Every structure is written in structure tokens, then in C-alpha cells.
Length: 327
Image (tube, rainbow, N blue to C red; front, side):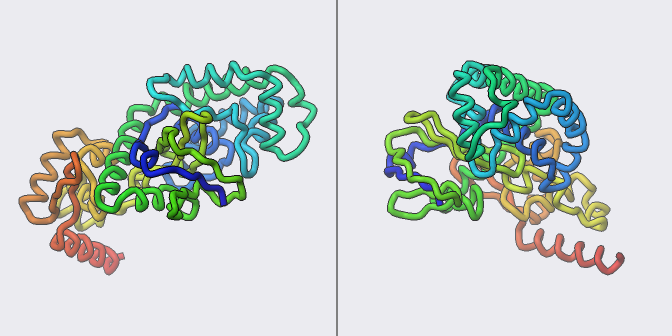
């Protein structure tokens, strides 16, 4: 397994960062895989995968670059720089474009764990990589960035509350289940690959959510190290919660949808992000549900989290049973 050694101060200073570049690279990985983790990704792939594949079919060198750069267990370093504080997406791509061609080829050879195909023995690989990333951002991520950003912000709220409740070890264990894990003795497992450990004490550790169900580690040695992880499922794919028909008839579809989502604690901003309803509408629905005793609220740090009360849980369960009997 791969792991990082870090001291208590480094962990205490770690923070969550929203990165348009990481979101774009995650989208590229999803397009490359072509396999959806949930219905939301499936719909996105239906919309964007044909054009992406047509672009690569018309450009075999870039197609081979992507296959080599994403590798089986190692992403070519130059393809995926870690976005820094205050750095725009364009600045991150500019660093990809400015990569020395020889360094790019060396990175790809590491990713492939073998010699490069003849088509990649060229000097325009950084330019090709930058152009492809700009395409993925412009065509598939930026048109939807406001919604994506709200989801990412909502995930950060949830993870920050988790730190308050269970500490950093709980959060790190949950980022990529089965991959990331706090090992104790100041060791953080970052994946299952047999890589040499890295000493990162004194560096900046950042945690970057992305909406696709993927993740990776990246760094700008020795200053910054990042763990990229997929958002919690309810945020990445809000359609994965079925609202019982009878509950929708009783409460109204929008209010029932909020009630079903609250089987896990969520803030108002999270609910706005995943439902697409306005802040005022969400607030009114929460007030009605609170007054009816179906949800309860508590403070977690700076956030107020809402969740099902015992009565709310019983109501949702009863309506689910009723729908099952009728089907």
C-alpha cells in the first residue's frame, strides 16, 4: 500500500479545497473509462461521450496520450498538477502546456511501465494534453460548473461536520473507502499500490472533492500534497433516493424529497445543492417538517444539520412499505 508520513501539525492544518482543475481531470477520467457509477453519471456520459470519442478518433496521437497518461496504477505527473490557492483553471493548464517535452515523455514511460509507442515520440505532447483538458472543461464541465460547485461545497460542509463529530481519522477513512485509511503512528494510507512511503510533515495537505466517483493523489513536491476523492453518493447522484409515491401525495413531492434525503444529516446549503430548489423554498419546507416533528436539527461547528427524527423515520418507512404492498 502507498502511505504518507505526516506529523500532527500537518494534519491539523489540512483543509478542503474546491478545484475546477481536479473536477475537469475527474471528468476526463470518466470519459476515458466510459463506465458510469450511478444514473447521474450515465446521463452525463450519454450527453458527452460520443463527441469525446469522435475527437479522439480524429486525433490518434492524443488518444494514445490519454491511454498512456492515465496508466493502470500511475497517472503521468505532468497531466495532473495540483491546483494551488488562488490559481485559476487556466493557470493550472498553462503549467501542463509549459512542461518540457522530454519530461512529459519520461512521465508517460513511468505511467506505462514500459517504452513509449512510436506515436508518442514527439515534442507536442504537453500542448496536446493542455488542449484536451481545455476541451473537457469548456464542453463538459464549465456549462454545469455552478451546480457542481454547490455539490462540492455541500460535501465540504458534511466532511467538516464529520471532523467535529469523529475527528480527522474518521474523515480520512471515509474519503475513499478501502483506499484511504488512517493507519496510526502518523501514517496515512492513500491507496493500495506498493509505492515507497513519503514524508510530508511540514507540507500543506489538501482534500479535494470531485463529483465523479473517482480519486487519486497528487502533489507539488515538497510544498503541497492532495487527496482527491469522490463526493458522498447522495450529493453526487441525488436521484439515488426514491420518494414513496404515497409520501409525495401526503407532503407534496418537493417536501417529501427533502424528508427522504435527511436519512443522513444535511445542511441547508447541501439540500439546495442536491435538490436544485431555491434557498427560500428549502427553508420553508424545513420549517414545516420541523414544526411537524418529522426532522430535527443540531449545530456542528458553524453549520446547522438537519436529519430525520424518530417520527420522520417511521413515516418514511411506513410509506415505503405501503408503496411496496401496492406494487
